[in-house]
Image (tube, rainbow, N blue to C red; front, side, top):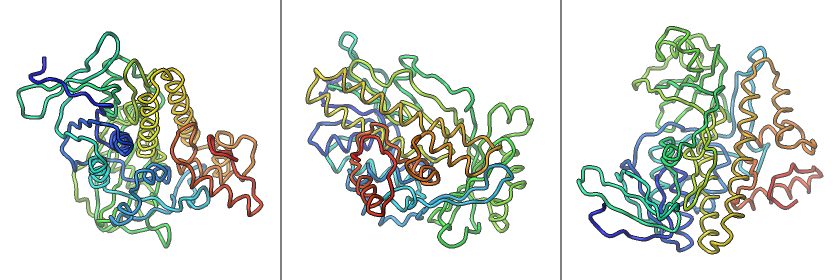
Length: 430
């Protein structure tokens, strides 16, 4: 039992990363009482530095564009690839696929700290170094948590009308209820390190992520604003085991055997130890239950090939906040609201996952990838396939996610003015 009486909130959010901070910030912005329990002390290190424009609807809803623009992160206008049959080099530009012409390569410690601090500014109660020990129930309904401050002996309790699991890959409730299902074909491992003295791509592509196919996997090359470059290797865990090499040895072999990445590393010096993590894609069998919902990596994780991680977190957090607000305002609508939340979320995830699988096929040409994107996003071919491709890899297919999509709506109107027929953005008026 707790040593103190429980405090009751409208919502408790477990996890203060992008999904949790955006959920909490948007709820607090509406005047809801929110408690965020984050196990780490921010700022803290995190991988996943490369953003795509799909983050902007949520960041704009939070009012964070000016602050983010002022942080000096590397601007990313698109992506550069050594990819497909024959390993050709090619680029894409975000401005071809939506109203957001750039994203950023960020230091996640600073970016995530900005989001969590902003949630606090908006009115959320944020408790860092708070380790959640167990969920609390009234009957079958989850309505609270028991937690402990790091280094403290006593436990505390908090109660809420709804609990949001935004615990990331800890998958707090997914593990508690045994809901995690793995995508067996995407059991990968990532190994990376940081380098100084790397070259850059020419001109407008200087801030791009470079993604290069190598035998059995791929490399990333992400230029950061502090002068370092994040370089990583992703491969299947089974292929790593079969190679007989350590993750670090295989990383070195693949970098040395690459074309684009190796060329940019001719004068580079490694300035960090290697890090590694399992990139095993998964989803929960369901994203909600009595008294709770899951969002961000706590609900699902998709292979990092398309840099969708933070977009999934922010779009998921934004939709979770809208869903929670609807549940608080009208509990009787819970079945319909939660059904819409899960269906929209799964539709967005499914489109990304289908394309990731198609994109791993190295027997295809660039135009084949364009066609794959069109089949997923714009099956009636109302726009050129390369536009559909850029829209998809920008993270701007929305399913039924309920972000403010006014910028996308405006972009579609401009396309109409030029005589083009815009692609269908689900949930956006045509």
